[in-house]
Length: 336
Image (tube, rainbow, N blue to C red; front, side, top):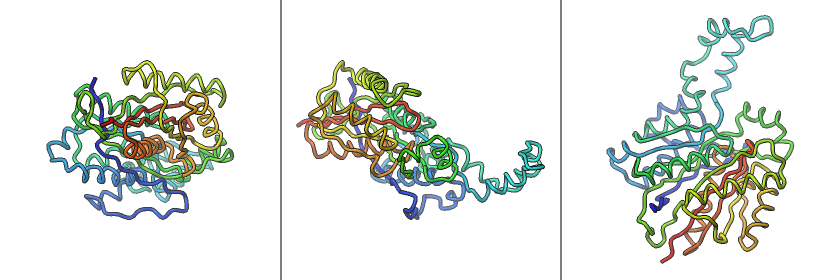
């Protein structure tokens, strides 16, 4: 079985609402005008990965890129101008939107609003041209992006694939969504961030010290309460991840890294981990805030960092975002 090795990883954030945004140059500084904050964070993380790997232009052209992306997060100044010009007699008017609203805003706003451009901006700057996909994510979509990238590498569709997520939970529109659905009242701490991992095909057994991604999967948990019903969905996600790893059962992991949306989800994941893996220590990335689409990827990076110092160790990432669909990612370090 081909082992998918984590060749490198890069994280930007999570940054809480009061954190100063990073201000770093891009390969093309003018591109910043077309970027949402999520796209900018993703581009910075991607540049970190590409710089570390030292890929040639030809290698970049064949590299895959699969990213969990959040909602549109464009400039509120432009969005406000567009909407103000589209209101007739106190109501939104589609004809006015076309006749007056669109001309009232910067045409570059379109590149901030299109969700897939969270991925596309960085891919264009870094010259990536392999298989790709932008998956809308409130958690589970990012686990799916990681699984897609691992599959692309394992099947030989590409030699290298970048996977992860980027999102801006502190954007006012997203904050309004989270407030409307009750997540802020239940303790979700919004954050911005981007997390990327670079996956390569390794040898059949892997080299000593390699951190391998063995499997990733998510299951449907929407509408299920945070109790035993959710445990069933977590079991489904873990079973699917094990199947992708070619195994029927999981050895006791050294660490279980949790990526919950807030305290209720953290309690549910912690309870599940304690019941299934009583000997494993747990780590909760949610204490740093929830960056929505970025959070599962940031948790995978945390797990990889732990394994780099744990010869022969195993890690399990359990994610539960605001979409309610749990995800599981299996990682291991090859023993000497």
